[in-house]
Image 1 (cartoon, rainbow, N blue to C red):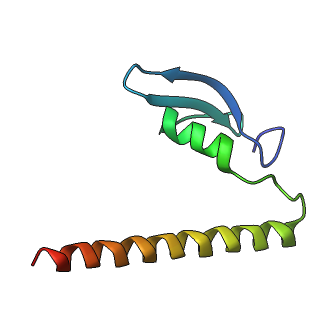
Image 2 (cartoon, rainbow, N blue to C red; image 1 turned 180 degrees about the vertical axis):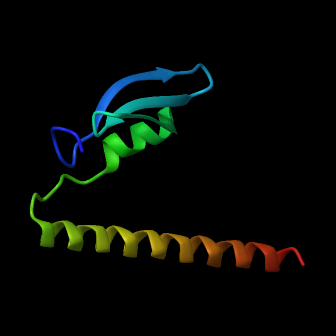
Length: 89
């Protein structure tokens, strides 16, 4: 167990020319980790993630709404793909 609970500390990042990003971080004062993402995913997160409501119950509702919106998007996409596939059979 480290000195500070529920916290990770970023130690550095590498952004490659192909858009990959490696984020290095530490936990428990004894572990080093790396997370991988892309510049596009980081930009999407930074510009489209809603502000934290700072209350647990509100955070749960916010996540629920995000999940529901994403499920609707997936259903719409699946429906459009099915229509497209049926047109060319």
